[in-house]
Length: 94
Image (tube, rainbow, N blue to C red; front, side, top):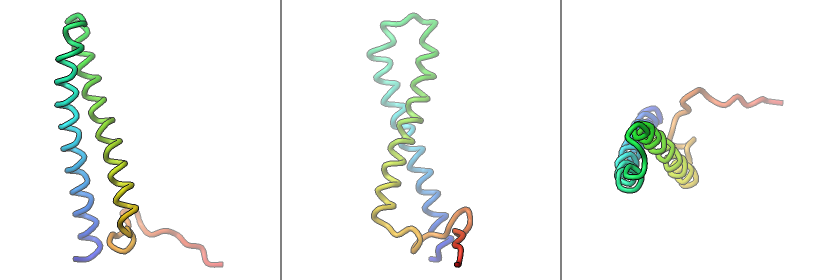
């Protein structure tokens, strides 16, 4: 496979990983929210709690995604296996 195919597969895999982690965190946070917080707040405030659970799941998945990406970048030489997504780096010749 060439670098462009590697880059496409990496981006697809990373996106799928991020979505799966977000769904897992959403389910986990929803269960925790329904067990510990819903009994103690009025019904009118519960919809705000669900919104916060959704935002917390997205934030948590983004944090996990960044840690995994940093780990992979430390282990893999990205320039060797992947093509730049936004173009090549401009290197000034002096």
